[in-house]
Length: 229
Image 1: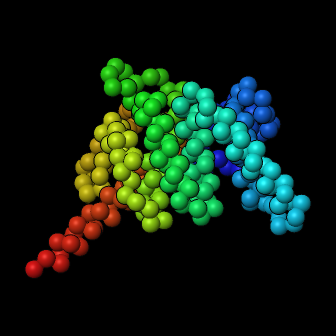
Image 2: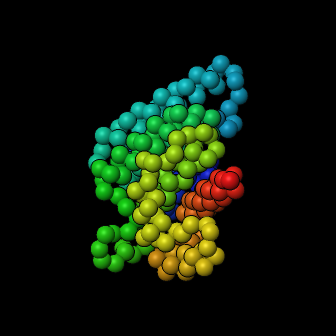
């Protein structure tokens, strides 16, 4: 089974068990994740024989059918998680335009479902596997939008600007230039959801790509300044 974290998806223990069993009953995990994982696994291992090509095509069709069924449901969090898998898989297949299309779909889902990192008022909810899944998916929306911008020549990630602002301000993900702010960022993030800082590679790599983009922007500004008479 593929390592889903590499594709920007975190699943809790029971859901991961269902995935490993190939459970397509929808009782624990939506079948779109199971079928999508089958497709990705076959991409890594399949040969080009006619029989394997036909089998792979059938698996792809089943995965899209399951995704279409999921997108008719009202669970915005699960839909975002599944769409993240679509984005990352198309990046893997060197199809950035399809990935960009689904980044926009994800942003629309986030807006419609009013999904966010931290509630606008009151204390943040207790940490749970479901919260970990949802926050991981939100962070990967930012990550892949920036990855496509920095690595694939995609447009500036304006569609995720609001989500990124929340990530930076509510979780205190600061910019690169100040070492003091960087230390402050670590302290504040640990206080908000310590587990996200300590062991979650999804949130950590989102933080990392934002720091890279901040550094590129800063260096670009300095380069512009140095060219002035």
